[in-house]
Image 1 (cartoon, one colour):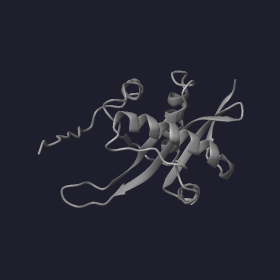
Image 2: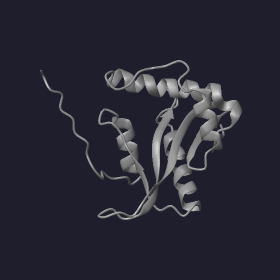
Image 3: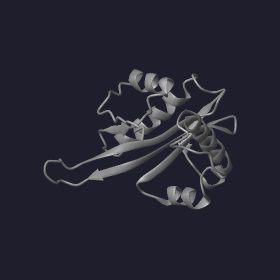
Length: 159
């Protein structure tokens, strides 16, 4: 079985929507007050915008002509203003590996593809956000050398 990681193409839209639907359902089941499932999972306009963007990117993992994963990322530029130092980095927005193909190295390969893309574009930092309930993803990112940069806390008020 040959796994291919490549940039998304126009004809990938149906498979990408299926992957996004799986990821959305996973998040909606854990945090229904923050996430919901939609149909289609992403609009064709969103998809076309990603395909033509110079800052927003989408790679897919393809195995035997079937999409089994995706990783969505953006290049972020932060302007220099006190006390913030100017910098640019890659922000990973989403990584999804379809159920049945998880824990087979697909997520790791997708992450390595973004790391290689970043190196090829002279971008030395990658950042991502992961929800605390997503233990498998946290474990993967830690194994790949990512570390906690900040923590976002929440309190729901009872009034």
